Length: 346
Ligand code: UD1
Image 1 (cartoon, helix red, strand yellow):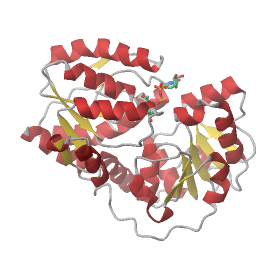
Image 2: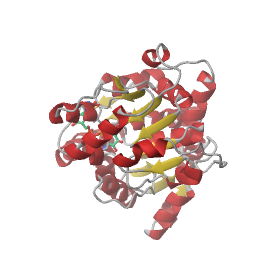
Image 3: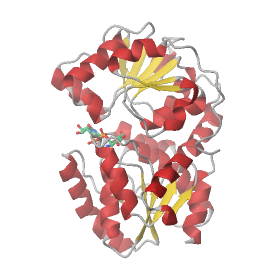
Image 4: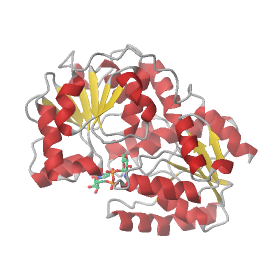
């Protein structure tokens, strides 16, 4: 079960690993993300089969979105009678799936279990905790995630498998290495640039904070490309904030390979995305994260990633280039194979 952009990316290697073992893997799309650039493009890029059902839930308040998914998803699970239901990450689609499975005799595995920000103002933090406590099998990406699960009394159902994002990233890196592929728009214009993404509710929904972030990005010393998430575009319109000003250039959301190639070429990443913090770390591009905490604390090693307030963005991106070895805290790219083996075992 998937519903939002990062979940389509995470599903790709799991689908392949299951197919390689001859397991039938059916996909239900909740329709939480419905714009083609946040959804269809990833099914095409990763050659993921079409979902057996698209619940077409779309955008609503958190409660209504979650409730609508719960109601629409249940009959599909009941009729398909799966041996395992897989859910990913921390979105409203994830929580809805966990609630449905916890009240049915079908087992559910949570991929990316055990992440915690300890920030209960984030809707995602509630989704993570509730989903982990409802799941039958907890598939953790890092040692740190395993420790969180242990401290919440969930050790018996928890397994360290590594991070499926590294599987995807390694494959993408091989296919694009040094071929210069970037978003056409960036490719034709600049040799040195920054890449920014902002979409978290804590950053986009408070006018003053969003204005501060956009002002800081527009005053940086290099062109700063911002592939704009629909939430950001919507909020900027609502607050009358200009996204194309100074050094800041708003562009359409990028495909996965375009994003990876762009991260590899960028001087620095400024983001509030979880995935991008890890992608920057793994690819060796310094990252500045506009948040007060991160679930991916491993990326903070040697200041490869730095947490900042909007006012600190300019200073943070001019820090010395990190030189500390990064190691492989997210695994070496075999997470999907580990997951498939565990699912078959149980
Ligand atoms: C969701 C997840 C977040 C994840 C992110 C990835 C929750 C609580 N949040 O945030 O954890 O990091 O996806 O992108 O589930 N919209 C569109 N078109 C779309 C999708 C959304 O226009 O295809 C707009 C709508 O105005 C909507 C807003 O974006 O109200 C927010 O979408 P929503 O699904 O609520 O959450 P995200 O911010 O995308």
